[in-house]
Structure formats: C-alpha cells, structure tokens
Length: 300
Length: 300
Image 1 (cartoon, each protein chain N blue to C red):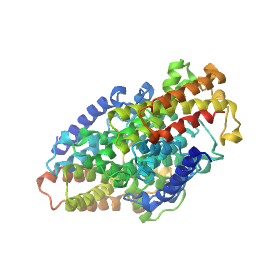
Image 2 (image 1 turned 30 degrees about the vertical axis):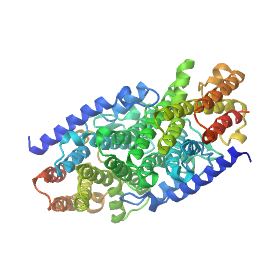
Image 3 (image 1 turned 90 degrees about the vertical axis):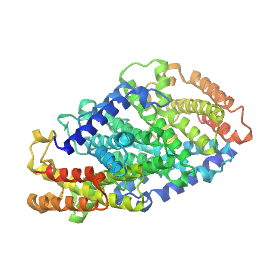
C-alpha cells in the first residue's frame, strides 16, 4: 500500500471503532434512554464502510501542527456524524430518492422514512455533543470554536444550503457560477470545515488558518469534480451507489457543462492549487498533499 | 394582564425580534450564502406566533440567579430554534402528517417536503451556532456546557428518541411507564434542558441545579398532561391545530389511559411537585412558580 492508503485505512479503522463505541444507548446519554430502533438506524447510516475522508482531513490538518491522531479523533468523529446525517437525509424520497448507498439499502429502505429522518437529526445533534465534551480538547475556547466551525460548514450558509440550491437547480437553469456556489456549499463547506477544525485543534495562528482554508476550499472543489467525473464514467458496481443519476435527475454539474476532458484538466489544476496553498508548511503537511493528489487519482 | 401574561408576552416579543434579526442570510453566515427559499422556510417554521414557553423557562431559571432577560436571550433563542425544528420535522407526512400548525400551513405544505427537512436541519444546526457565539455568554466553559445540555435534551436520549418512541407506540401496546418515558423524552427533555440551561447561564451550583432539574422534570410532565387533556377537550379553532388527533392516530397518552378527570387531578399534583422543588429559592423563582401554575390553568 502507498503511504496514503495506509493513512486512509488507519483513519477508517479508528472511526469505525469510535462509531461502534459511541453509537450505543449508554454512551449517547440524555435524560431518557435512546430507543433501540433509533440507535440501530444511526448505526446503519454510519457504520457502513465509508472512506472517512473528512476525518482524515481533520487528522491531517491537526498533524500539520504536530497533533497526533488520537488527540484529533473525537472532532474527526463529529465531522463524520454530520456527513452521515447528510447522506441519510439526502437519500430520502423527498430529496434524491436513493435506495442504495455503498451497496446497502439506504436507511429509509432498511427502516422507514420517519426513522431515517430521526436518525439523521440525532447524528447531527450528537456531533455537537461530541465537540462539547472535554475529551474533544481540554480548552473550552477551542471546543466552542469547533462548534461554530461545524455549524457554519453544515448550516444554511454551508452544506444544508447547498443541498437546497442543488434541488432548486434541478428545475431552473444555473450558470457556471451558480453551480460552483452550490457545490462549494453542498460538498465544499464540510470539507473546508474539516480542514479548519483540524487546524483549530492544532492551534493554528491566523496566517496558517488562512492557508489551510485555501487548501480546504480547493480540496473541496477537487473532490466534487472527481465525484462528478466518476458519476459519468464509472459503473454502479464500482461506486456502490447508483451512477449516471445526476444527468437523469437533471442535476447540473461542471462536468455536464464543460465535458469530462475539460473537467479532468480542471481537476488537475485544482489539485495543484490545493498543494500550492500548503507552500508555507514542511513535511508535516504531506498528508494533506497526498489527499489532494488522491482526489485527482480517483477520477482515473 | 396578570404578571405571568406580561412575562409571556414580553419573552414572545423579544424572541420574535431576535428570530427576525437572526434568520437573515447575512446573519446566518457560513462559507456560502443561505438560499432565499431555505431562509424563508426557516422563518415560516419559526416566526409564527408561538408562545415561546421554553425561552421563558430559560429566562426565568436564569432570573433565579439574578441574570436579566437580555443576558439569557441568545440561549433562549437557541432552545426555541430546536423546538421549531422539531415541529417542522414532526409535521412531515412520514411523521405526524399535519397540514396545520398554529392556524397556518405547515412548512412542507407551504413549501415542500425537501425544503421542510432542510429547514428543520438548518434550525437545529444554527441553534448550536448561537450557543457557540461569545454573545451567548462571555465564558466559553459555560457555552460548551450549554451545547452539551441542548444536545442531550434534543438527541437520541431526549427529544428525537422520544419522537421515535411515540411513533413506535402507535403500532404496539405501551404500559403507563412506557408512556411516561416517551413523554419525558419527547416533550420533557427540552423543557428540562431549558430550565437547566437558564440555571447554567446564571451560575447555579450543583445543589441549585439539582433542584431546578427536579422543577424542570415536573414542569415537563405538567405541560404534557395539559396538552393531552386539551387534545381531548378543546376545539381545533381554539388550539390553532388539529385536535382529537391523538386518539385518531392510536397515540397513547396518560389521558387515554386514565381519563380526563384523573389526568386533571394528576396535573394538579404535578404542578404542586414542581413548585415544591423551588422551596429553597426566594421570590426570584416566582416566575418559574407562575409558569408551573399556568400549565395547570391552561387545561381548564
């Protein structure tokens, strides 16, 4: 395995273990007792072999400042809970209406719609619970900054707003700029937040945070470009989810606008831009550099 | 007006003004721009003349420790956003399938299901954003405690778990104990959290927090009892939402189990219990006492 693949399988294993331990009635806590069915749906929607790229970005950004993976793991888990909630809600019949996710029935198919809505709501809520715990970081000032960052990345001006724009785009024409804004919010905002949360955990100063934000924004664009290219070029089997759906749903992507070849060139430029943003950092930023290169490689 | 009604109309006005100011694209923030449709749906689901009882409880619990209403307003707003998100999601076709809320079309009727899901998700997310802001409280330690409290009250072991139990109860028999647990989670947990958040804001010590928690738990039971009694006895017009629906939906409440007369007596006892929990506090706890009495009075 390449060093990148070792890192990716390492974080995937750590996150699966943390999810498995956290998503249990006793650990979730609260004044009552989490019902079995709700916990099972939360587990189904998250313990599903995801790549855990956002947790990897949290870890790699924290590593730029010398923080080890164990110290950034709880914040990484919080980001992953938000990502999993967004997939559960996006898959709902009223949204993208997907039956399949990573080769398994989506939560509303395996359970029902009401349970899927509540499982998503709960994963989102518990992401913030995780960030509030002292285990996340000993300094409460850091913890509230993480809460603010995750909320900004996933709220109306971030991921949820991007999903709204995506749905609106199915029924109305979008300019290239509008597609870029939608994607920067829908996918980019949480990737940007992941990188920034790692930097905040690591104690980045303003200048370092700005550089990592630029990396995160470029990395988010690269990730989305790769995903849109794969939706056109890959098979359902290889992706573990329905492909070719964007075009069928009338979804507008940069790939549908400029074609696969131009999008692939644009992806290469965007990865170069992401890596350039890290020019001020030494080998401790190699993890982030490799992840950016992976975004380009996966589209081939 | 009684003093209680003055307090209730005062907090309602303050919360409406704060909601109006906060639910605007510029104030919501994020790396992108919140889409107009999403902001409109968030406003529709929250700027609707709610009684704002939970914000009142935050304010009244903080007032026990001498904190004025302005200082607790941001935390009160956060609790109200969570309450409004829960109503939007509970009204969805996959959940309670309600077309009417406070005399107005529910969010999924006024907009559509996808928009309602996203509006609820966003209100929940921004509740935590509000608690993370320095404006909420100058001490970050207090702010992370508020985040933890709100998450515990609204997550899988609180409100969301209670809604799951409520849905499960429609298709399976519930004991009185199971009904009580469901209601303590679905409605009680956020009322309990409201009181505790006010106490935390005010700097309550362990003993005071325990007393106010006991008050909050009894107040939550009283509120739910009054609501269930009203569902049987009041008209749709008086409530501004469909009534008699619990029985029609096969929902199990203590009222359906023990009857209106016994439930009304039980309500009186529960209000007495709530007020008894405040025995250690002086006139600064009169607001909380009056609110408990109001829960009994509204069922008549």
